[in-house]
Length: 277
Length: 321
Image (cartoon, rainbow over all chains, first blue to last red; front, top):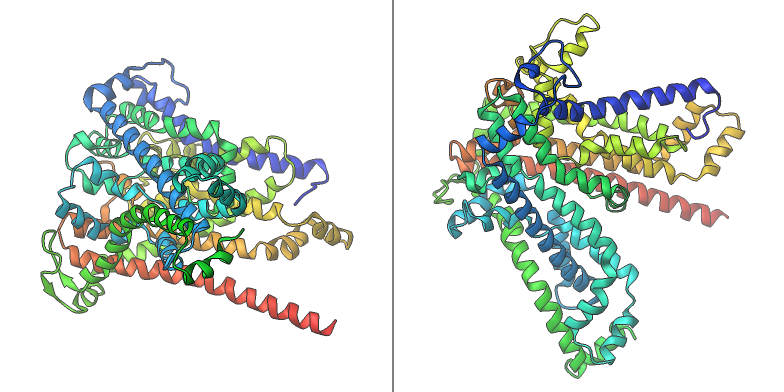
């Protein structure tokens, strides 16, 4: 395991890792390459990994044939609202569960935590019907509603606050006459930058990637997200591979950018919490 | 000063001013969160159980009480049985292969490796990317005429395969793509587990003359068992929820034949939102819930009983010492 001795096993290890890495990266390269090819080159045989002529035509087509700018901003808005809401609800509920005592506290905590294992797919039918009753089908509020809270977020915040913020600090602020809200805002919140970073990345990534809920809750294109728009676009125009791959690249950019910048933090966050990406 | 020590006294005299303010703050902070939770999680989970006993439509969820009829119908419905079988097959294979590859990669990357951070990033890349674009590109890779996979296979003399056209290969194709998507996640979890194993354990085994394979089998693998269990259960649960890649790869003129890779969530989606048999689909969702619940309890049960065993063994050791 550790300490490979000898050159041959070391070489074998690196060759295996490289081959694996090639398999992992190839679909992304192929996506990018296809998106930059002119139509006649997309369907050429043998396939060319590097386009002979580079063109941005496919990106222009994507914007011309489907409202992808709209989809992009819908996704951005949905993911941002969701991230901010999850941060606020996780921080406040995590703080209250960590530092306050009141009747039914443990019951409420276990209730919020136990729903973490139940995926949306299990309860999406009644949730959809609630949205019908509220008149929220095909509205932004209906689209974002399931993504305003995150059980793991509350749990993660609570653990962090219990470990890093001493009761004495809060009591000292109370004796100085600070209101509870002010203590939360001035003392507690600034100390949570670590978990806030981790949770916001997960919240953003999770909401950006949402597919089945946008699929059932929206009926008009104006509300489609990037993922849904792409799914529907490839459904209808399957032969236009260039533009489809251009759209795919566009939908990857925000998440990949965040990942490449904050790689260490993301990987740490996952291993700390067992949060699924 | 701890809140706990002042709490009983305060309760006797009624709450002190500070305690009262704390209570008000706690309730006003937690109330909106619980309200949202109730509306988008807890209520629909309970309603789903309720609706599964009814004949219902989108507008009227409790149209007619059916008792267990939805469930008995379900197990006579060949499409549901097919979805259940497909999903189980999918979950087992995705979990099996992703765990094997993940352990292998984690073992290789656990020792200081040149370019280790690069490999971690590359293997993790598909985990963080959304499912739709990668499903779209894999569908293109699987294209029978111009696809990259058939081209690469042609180097080895393999005749072109219509990957998404035939039921058997369509399932294999979606499994391969899904393993590719999650192997990095499992790898990272195993990597942390292996790095947590004290170097002295491995050193001791090596001094006793154990070779690399023996160290792995006798030391690393047994110590990884709790993490292994976690990864197995999480991967299986996530695989049972498979939908997006199936939806993308089976749709459109170049897509797979629908029923070949029909999964539980796909069947729920079609019944509820295409045929509006919401009560019936809710019953399917209950079955999915029970599968997930059983898997979760298995994990808690096994790790719980092992902890108890360990503790009683330690106690016996302590008593004999």
